[in-house]
Structures are given as structure tokens and as C-alpha cells.
Amino acid sequence: MTDPQRTLPAHAARILLGVGLLAVLKLQLLLALLSGLGAYALYCWLYARAAPRVAPRWRHLVANLLFWVVAAVLLALTIKAFETLHIGAPSTALARLTELMADSLERLRAVLPPGVAAHLPDSIETLRASIVGWLRAHGTQLRGWGMDTVRAAVHLLVGGVIGLLAAMQMEKPVKADTVFLQAWRGALVRLVQAFTGVMGAQLRIAAINTVFTAIYLLVLAPMVEGPIPLARGLVLLTFVCGLIPVLGNLASNSAIVLASLAVSPTLALLSLAYLLVIHKLEYFLNARLVGNSINARTYELLAVMLLMETVFGLRGVAAAPIYYAWLMGVLREEDLV
Image 1: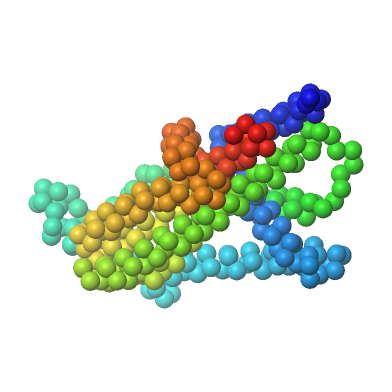
Image 2 (image 1 turned 90 degrees about the vertical axis):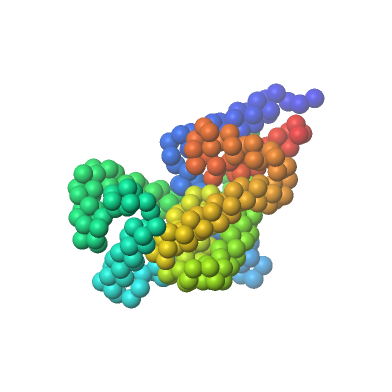
């Protein structure tokens, strides 16, 4: 017979963590959570690889060094992905961007109906004046976006530090562990396992998306209209952004469509259509690969993603696979599924 003194605290710990996960979405702390889980999982993986080859007293030091090396490499790749979108020095890049915008305006005016084309700026100087006016009118909103960016960076940093500190404490014994704390730590470990499984699948999804995008940008688009500016940088950006579920694809797709517009409006529409198809397929690909990694059916994960998107928006879509994997793991521990 099950001891209520053990099951009740265990259930309370899991319910409390579940409520906390929903609060993370409501309070817009998902980036901090993902950063913390990523840092924890990476450190544990490096520690496990170092353990058989390093003396016990040096394991944490070696794992720490490897962790920061990997973090530095990932940061360098991310910076490189964005740097490849610039051409030469900043002033040259700005001049090139201005030229691309002017070409795009001329192409749009040539294909749009006269009534619509009349509302477009007639020169790059007019466009520049319109942009300056818009910036002045929306200064408060832009400052808010800047604060959001700073806040996101802080969340990533603080979440990563918390995850790293938690991982470094994983082998230290805790005196007089209660049933609640044992269950709480077990639920957290299950959450890390869910995150690891989902991100492993997301890495494969990012690689597949990058291959399809590279085929389009480097092969198909030049055959149809002409080479897209910054195509190689956009391929690298697609992979880096693809590591972020759903949201990353939106960012890279927007950059690709804007670059295609510099060639022609027709190519921009083709790029948009192509990327929309890939974006929709990603939902099914995500559900398929992630579902296999967490032992969940495709339709289950799609339903959860749809529900989470309805309630929490895009944050819900990004969190849905991890949350569902964690929930199913907890239910399997209780032999409920």
C-alpha cells in the first residue's frame, strides 16, 4: 500500500513545478528558463565526458573551462552570422543598404498599379525623410523595444548563470532531504531531460531547414531571378536562428524576404511563398521529430502547440514541446500513461 506521507509531498512538488512553468510563460521569463536549462544540460554533458578521463578533484574545473569554451564558440558563431549580413565597413554597408532600398523602390513602382505606386516615396531622399519622421513619431515605442532587448539579454545571462551554478552543485550531498525536496529535484531533472530531448530534435530541424533554405537561396533563386544579396550570410543566419523553436524561423524568414525584395518584388513573393511552406512544414516536422524523441504522437504534440499558442502566443509554441515532454515523463513515473 502506498504511503500517503510520501506520495502527498511528491505530488505537491510536481504540481508546484507545473504551476511555476505556467507562471514562467505568463511573466515572460521563458528565455531565462531556456537559458538555465541549456547551461545546466551543457555543463552536465561536459562533466560526464570529463569524468572518466580526469581526477575527481579536477572534474569541475575542466568542465567549467570546456563550458566557457563552448559558450564562446557559440557566441562567436552567432556574431559571425550577423556580421555576414554587413558588407565591408559600417559606412559601406549602410551605403549598400541604401542602394538596395532604392532599387527595391524602383522595382515596386514599375510593377504596382499607378494608384498604389503613387503612395510610394519617389526617391531615396523622400524615403529617408519618411523614416526619420516615423522614428520621431514612435520614439517611445522604439525605446520600449530597446528595453525589451536589454531585458531579454539580462534574462539570458541570469538564467544561464543560475543553470550553471545548479549544475555545479549536482554532486554535493544535501543533509536531511525531505520527501518534498527529493520529488522536487526529481521533477527538475525530468524537466532537464525533456529540454535535452527537445533541443536534440530542434538541432536536426535547424539543419534540415538550413539545407532547404540553402538550396533555395544559392540554387533556385539565382535560376529564377538572380542572386539574392548576402545569400551565404542568410544561410548561416537561418541555422543560428533555427535553434530557437518557431521564433527563430520568423526572424530569418523576414531577413530573406527583405533581401529578395532588393532583387525584385516577384522574387520577394516567391521567397515568401517558399518560406511559408517550409514554416508550415516545420510544425509537422517539429511534432514528428520532437514527438519521436519524447515518445509522443505527432497529433498530440500538434494539439498541445496549438493550445499553447492560443493561450500564450508564440512563447507558448516554443515552450509546448518541452512542457509536454516533462508532463508525460511525470505521468509515466506514476504509471498513469
